[in-house]
Length: 287
Image 1 (cartoon, helix red, strand yellow):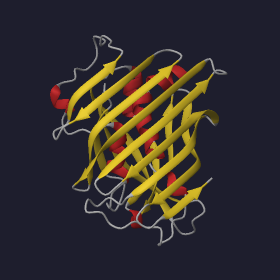
Image 2: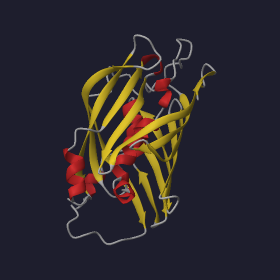
Image 3: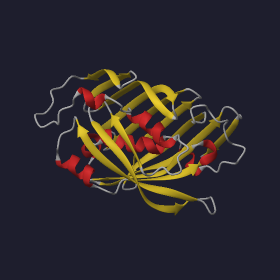
Image 4: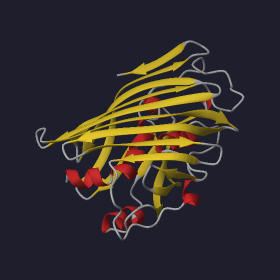
């Protein structure tokens, strides 16, 4: 059960990050709690969120997310801790991403991911230039399996790191979060995430407001092995994210995330979130 979770962490980690990218979806924001428009089209906002990761309703771990989005730059940080089998298995991952904001979109500059577990430790470091990734270090160094789909230099052009991809989706003034596709490289695998409209659902605690549910389609491009696990992830239409659109803050806020696994449904559950809009000094929070 847990090994399946770990083997799929690159794809599922990106999806879970969508849920941490400003879980103010559960926080009613008043018209006063808005930020002044930015020349880049992205509103300055700081988010500090903690939530629980569950599998089939059982606690699996915690996820801490912090973001600081300014007028021309951003930083994103996550801290994930997973524990199972009474602590026999553990996994901890810390991620940092930073960049600039240009033409209403993030332009990543630096990405760092460090993890440690009861199985192995490692890290991924990436740097970006104007075209894409210009430096990459993955530790430990391992030999690729013979059936790995080759990764070429062209696969590293015009891509987002996993956290900057979240910025591209959630910080926007587009009318809907669905109908969008982002190209992602996580240090080993190049894949696309395509958001497709599914339905509308009521927003809990906010009368008359609905959230938009998008199905997430994963398409592997290169750097992956064509295993049964990969084929199942590429074939499924059951990964879903519910977004609440907060137009005043130019945010598409993930309200819930559900991901199918071989062992059942993985979900995220908000425990605490604090949102600060620096220009107005307003703070929204919930426990």
